[in-house]
Amino acid sequence: SQTIHQWPATLVQPVGSPLSLECTVEGTSNPNLYWYRQAAGRGLQLLFYSVGIGQISSEVPQNLSASRPQDRQFILSSKKLLLSDSGFYLCAWSVRGGNEKLFFGSGTQLSVL
Amino acid sequence: TQLLEQSPQFLSIQEGENLTVYCNSSSVFSSLQWYRQEPGEGPVLLVTVVTGGEVKKLKRLTFQFGDARKDSSLHITAAQPGDTGLYLCAGPIASGSRLTFGEGTQLTVNP
Image (cartoon, rainbow over all chains, first blue to last red; front, side, top):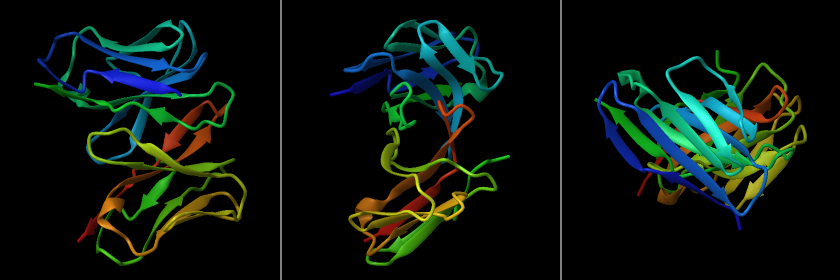
C-alpha cells in the first residue's frame, strides 16, 4: 500500500533562518507531488506541484522554493523565512494521469517568530 | 477570487441533528471531491462526484453533484461528535493535475 511521510510535524524557526521540509512517498512510482499551505481552519493554497523529477511548477510568487531530486521525494525550502511564512504545510501525492484524488501527509506546523 | 465558495463557514450543532453544507461555483467542474480534515492532520478524501445530478451515500453522509456540475452539497443525518472536522470541497482546474479547494466548513457536533 502507498504511504506518505512528512517531517517534521512541528517547527519553530526565527525570522531570517533557512527552511527545509521533506516529504517522501512509498509504494507508488511516478506520482504527482504537491505542496499546499493552510491558514488555521481554512482552505488549502497550492504552492508547488511536480509531475516528474526536476519538474516544478510554482502557483504563487513567494519566499519559498521546491525541489524534486528523486521520483518520490519532494522538498520545500526557503533561504530566509518571513513571519508570513508561518502556517500548516501539507505534502500530497496523486496518481499521474489519474483522477486527481489527493493523498495527504500529516502536515508540518511552522511557526516563524 | 475563490473558484469554490463553501457555506456556512462555521456550523455548531447538537448530536442527533441533521445538517447540510454547500459548495458553489460559477464554473463547471468535471468532478468535485469532498475531504474531511481533523486538527493537526491532513485532509482525507471522502468521495468524488463525477456525473451531474449524481448522489452518493457514505453511511450517514449524502453527497450530491448539481445537474449543471457547478455545485455540490453534503448532508449529514443524525450527526455525531465523530463527525466534527473541517469539510473541504475541491475540484480540478486547468489541465486537471491540480485541485482548487474551497475555504471549508468547520463543523462542531456537541454531545
